[in-house]
Image (cartoon, rainbow, N blue to C red):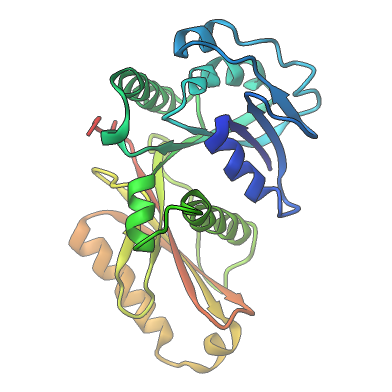
Length: 278
C-alpha cells in the first residue's frame, strides 16, 4: 500500500507506518528531507498553498494501486490535498485519513479553513471520488488513552492510530477462521475506526460518527484460546446480534487467530451521511 503524508501531522503518521514493510511512504511538508520526501515552499496561508501546488509527476513516478492519503486539518498546507490527489487519481485508488484537531484551540482563520477542508473531503467521498474517507479526532484518541503527558503527546495518540490501522490491514489480507470482513455498501464512504473490549463489550471510536449504518468487528484472538474455549463462539455471535438489534445497523465480523497473548477487537464503522461541523 502507498501512504502519502501531507504536512507535519500526516508525515508523522506516515513515518510510523514506514516501520512496516507493507507500506511505501511519500512525505510532503515544509523543510522536509529524505527519501521520497517533497520540500514545499512555505506560504502565507491556505489560499497560497492551494494556488501554488507544484507538479509532482516526477515525485510520484511509478506510484499505482491502493493509496492512503493522510492529512491533518489544523495546518494551512492541507489546502494542497485536493490538487495533489488530482495528479495521481488516474493511477491510484485513493482513501483519505483525515485527522481532525481540537477545534476549540484553532484560530479563526484556521477554524474556517479546517471546516472547509473537512466538508469538501466528505463531499468528495460521497460523490465517489474517494474510495473511503476515514475521520479521526485527536480528542477521541486522547480520551481513549486517558491522561496523556504533554511531552510525547502526539507520539502516544499516533501509536494507537497506527497500530490499529496496521492490524486492520493485516487482518483484511488474512483468512478468518470464522466470519468475513464484508465490504460496505457502495454509498457508505465515510468511516472511522475503533477498538472494543472483547469481554465487557465497551466500544471506543476514533471519531464520533453520526448515523452509523454498517459496522464490522475484527477479532484477533490467541490461537490456543480459539482451540480450547468452548463458549467463545456463542459470546461473539451474541455480541453481533445484540449490536445489530439494539443499534439497528448492519453488522459483519471476522475472527482471526494470532500468536499474541492479548486478544484484540477492532471496528470499522461506516455511514453515507455527511457529518456536522461540530
